Length: 185
Image 1 (cartoon, helix red, strand yellow):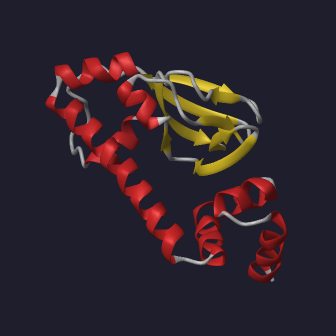
Image 2 (cartoon, helix red, strand yellow):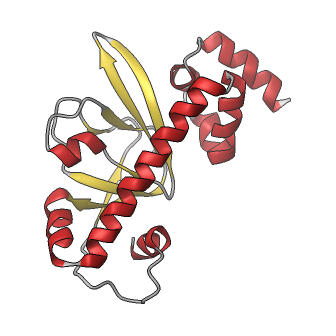
């Protein structure tokens, strides 16, 4: 995870100015990593695999995002505010990730300017991602948004159930099937 943090923050030294212990975790496909209504306790970096972020209203699932290898993910509002999560994070494939606890993040922020900088950059990165996604949702067609997903992780997108990708794009599965045929051919 240190190399990922160096890329994220532009750190040029070979050592962090604070102690940083990550825990490697693995999840089988379909495992719920963070449940809706539970307080998020970790931020994760995906080494292998993919996850989806969903919200449930009554029994209907709305897919809000996908995260792939080399992405950071968490139920961000829940982690920052330490309040129940409004989202659920589920492994779409088998996942290997590293994670850091909320408690450790808070200690690092207090101990080190470099640690605070990393936290700020992680928050900025998540904010920029969310803003871009909102703009794309308003300005791009479903086909253009699907093509962007393919650019991110073509192999994994083709493995994700059509109903999940369609929900993420805000279209019916039948419409996505037509888009897939058009884009892939």
